[in-house]
Structure formats: structure tokens, C-alpha cells
Image (cartoon, rainbow, N blue to C red):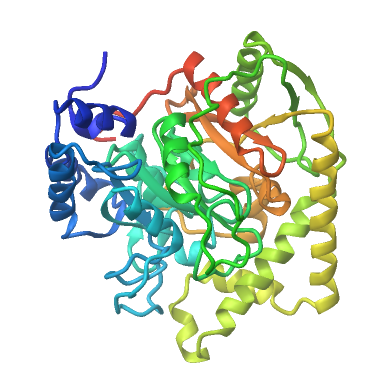
Length: 468
């Protein structure tokens, strides 16, 4: 049964109501902000709310009344991760060491959201500088999972994942350098799309510029494609930005997977852990794709050990970040971040250059795999979300054993990859699968994800029920 509460509607449902004049952007915003006021204290998804949102919703309402909406997202409530610049607000990056002064210029993706007519609700929480997967940071504390607030929503797009699951707006902008969109999407039971590298321009570039992307988190695959259509626009500020013409990524999303070939990936270059729920979700998704006409089989791309590659990239980036702060201020940083930087910061230049060579070897191996297979299917996360209140320990091991063993490979290879929810597991927490495609074939991951979604509709947590 379609929802009657605007806060629970998808972006496409809202736009349909606006066009029929059965709902207004102001009514939607009031429903969403009332929900945030009621439920966010237990979730902590926001770094800051936008006091100008009501005025923006009013302007959108006037455009719809005049029959002159502009852009793809006119009047749709959206959030922006606090690693991304939004003019008029500080970009704190979850850190006590960043400036509280507002920035003056929108990041490219935010330009796209504004040009699409989106109503920006505010900025969502992030782990400090996006360095880890558990959803806490020194500046804003612990963000919690709406499915069960004793658990983390994941990170580093922690607030975006939690806000999506809690229905704090329809669309949420995250970033992903090792799984930071896909991991919170998996642990919060929503859709998270990591586009091809360069598809969504970014500026200023962050610590992980060579592998990081910006992309959508949403409650449906079509909404993720809709948001991608608004933010995937060339921007000259980003030297990696693709020059492709704008397109609506929904145009081919219903074409299905009949005739496509799918490789089930059992190891991303090493024996990545995954629990029984994760294995069952992959097997179920493989069956759904096969029933829809795809050819599915296991395949090994012959990847190098991607733990070694990503560890070097991650460690050097964090060491460079730490070195940018005066020594007497560094104790204010997350202790785990300092631990990784200290452990890997003394890496010889030749080892880092070797890591880049191995990264290219991994990309080549996946490109060769995609000569035979259109899609890759694998887990997103190794297990359900861990507890939210546990202090991060042994981050170098946690990276590949508990956080991101299934996600960081696709950052190294720069391919598009998407998290699709698969319903609750045995513990009542979300399960998911991950679908990847060859570089620049974002259309294929959206098609496959849409097939899975339509045959395995997502479920969402009941935040109004008894407290977890």
C-alpha cells in the first residue's frame, strides 16, 4: 500500500504528487522536519540543519503552482554529507581541527542538487575525514542505526545511511573511498551507489582523491538513478571529471538483465570473510538474476591481494592528512586515525609507487573479467553492523576483516558498484548484496539492482515502535 506520510515517500512519488497538486513541497518539508525533530535525537544523523530549507520549499511550491518546475528534483528533500562543501555552512569533516567558518562555494554535486531544485535539509555526519567504517567521530559523537540504535549505521557516510533508513528526506549525498556509501547502505538496508570514478565531479578533493567518488544513498534504485542524473554533470574544477553529456540514468533502468552474464565473486584477491547471512543473500540474488534471464556462474578474476594495495593507499593518505596539522593539535584527532598514520606513514616512496602499479594490475584483471561477464555479484559487508558504542581497535586488521573487505577493491579499480538491500537476516538486521560492472557501465549496475529490488522489495525499520 503506498505511503500517505510524505516523509515515507520516494523522490519519484513526491514528484508525482507535486505534478498532480495532491501534495506540496512545503507540506513534504514539514512532515520530514517533524520526523527529524521526533526521531533524530536517538539516531544523531545530522551535523547541522539548514534554516533556509523552508524558504527553498516555498520557492519550489510557487514554481509547481505556476506549472514551471525546474530540474529533476524540484522540491525533493535532500541531505549532504559533511565532507562536501555546501555554501553558507562550515565543512567540519567530523573533526575538531577544522574551521567552523562557513564556506562560500558549493561543491560540484551540491551545484547539481541546487540546479535540480532540491531542498537541502542540512549536512549529515561523517567519520573524521571519512577514515573508517564505524559511524562515530570526535566532533559529533556516535551516529546510530535506525534498525537498532545499539548498532552502528556504518561509515563513513554514517549520517546519510541513517537518514535514508529513518526517512529523514528522500535523497542523500555521500562519498565513497573504500566503501563509505555502500557499507552504510548495507548496514542500514538502503540503496547506495558508488558511480564510476569521475562520473560525479568533486571539489575540493579530499584525502583519498585518487579513488574517492560522490554518489547517492536512497530508498529505491530508481531514486538513486534520479539523483545521479542531477549530480553527474561535468565541472571544470575537478580535473578527473568526465566530460560526458548529461543524461537521465533512469532511461534504461527497466531493461532487465536477460542475456547478460553475471560472475559470482567469492574472493576479491584474498579470502575475504562473510557470514552465513551474506552468503545466503548472494545466492538468493544470483537466483533472482538467473530467473530474470541472466547467465550466472562463479568466476575468479585473478586479482592481486587488494588488502596490500588499499592498505598502502589508505595509510599514506592518512599520514599526509595528519602531517598537515601542527603536532600539538594532533591529539584531537581520532586515536585510530593516528594509529594508522603512525603505522603506515613511514612507507618508502617505492612501496607507494608499487601500490599504484598493483592498483592498475587489479583494474586490468577486472577489465579482462568484464570481457566475459557484464556484471559481478558479491557481498557488500562481512557481517551485520557491529555495536555502535565499541571503541575502534586494531583498525589495520578491522579494515579487511570487519569493515570493507568486499568494497575497497572496486575503489581501486574505479568501477561502478551498488549496494542493494535483501531484507533482514537472522538477527533482524539488514542483509544486502553488491553488484559491480565494468568501468563507466553504471547503467548495468542500475539495471541489475532494479531487477533485484522489484523481485525482493526492501523493508524499513519501525522507528515509531518500542525503543531498541
